[in-house]
Amino acid sequence: MTIPATATHDYGPDVHSIDLENKHVILIGTAHISQESVDLVKHVITTERPDCVCLELDDKRYQAMSSKENWQSLDLKQIIRNKQLSTLLVSLLMSSYQKKLGNQLGVKPGAELLGAATTAKELGIPISLCDRDVRITLRRAWKSTSIFRKGYLLTSLLASMFDSEEIDENKLKELKQKDVLSNLMEEMGESLPELKRVLIDERDIYLAEKIKDTTGNTIVAVVGAGHVAGIKKVITSNLQHKLDEIIAIPPVSNGWKIAGWGVPFMILASLAAIGYLKGAEVAGSNAMFWILANGIPAACGALIALAHPFTTIGAFTAAPITSLTPVIGAGYVTAFIQVMTRPPVVREFESVGDDISSFTGWWKNKLLRVFLVFFFTGLGSAVGTWVGGYEIFKNLFS
Image 1: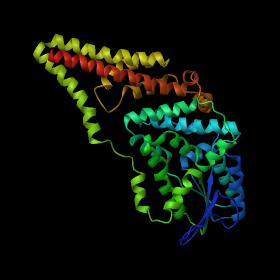
Image 2: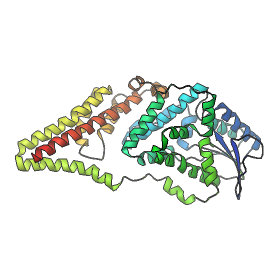
Image 3: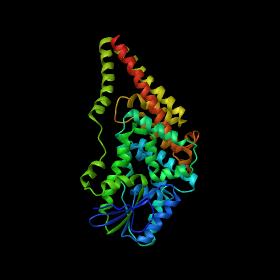
Image 4: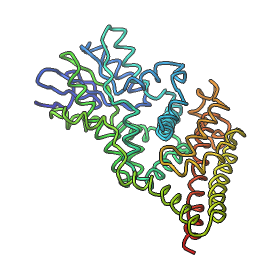
């Protein structure tokens, strides 16, 4: 198998021709915020008239990009039940980052992918969505990252939201050599290699295998420029056996399971021991301290987030209980109550990309306020667990 540098026609350095055993692949590397990329993919598809057009999209992202009312399919209550608020937040942050760059250039993020789909449909050419489900990608990325690096990731993403740097031609050229996402990963440095593996390397394999499985002799594949080198590297290898591995959600490690159940067990066992050794009254006082130590910080977190009064009451009530089980945290309970009492309206779903880059926007937008409730009540509950646990252990051994 050979991989010439460019396609049959001279489309420039962003178009690559790959000859496989049973098909010819024309691989287009794009910048997701470039009008030049939009024009390029339309020109190549119109000229080549391929049997199929492959896109670096999964069904969820395609529906979100192509539907003006994609917010209607976002079930916040189900997302909270599935404990996917963190991955949704990362997705929103990344989308907002791309949108901010695109606004400076007057191009909607992913316009070249939509342009490719539209052109293909106009010519009667089928399209194939070849990317891994974005929910799997984000959940694998989140699971593969340590708790300390999760904080670094969110901090870096948040910092990018408030970066006022303007995009110039030199910066655009840089973005064309990698896509926005891989550029962001590079800026985070070598401290997050596990994220690059999940967000870039695994998807290179997935995209390459799906492109090869696409029906037709001539295929045009439109991907972010950051995936081109990786796809060209792996597409001539048979890595079909890796697909099951890279679409699976890693289970919680036994160590985390033991720690998750171990802390509640020690708290309850300590209270029982205090009751046995020092009497029910002392045990009751320690239990009351546990309730207050957890409930007050969690309720204060809800107040900081400007949560609904019922949410604040729920935070105070839930924190002492949820701290004794790893099944669900106070943040998820209060986020659910907040959604039920102050559900986001249509306008806030539509403006979240702009509000997320404004400090005050996090409190004004009811969708973003759900994340504030989730974070601050969860943080308050965590502080209360350590304070309450320390006091109980101290009293047991004093």
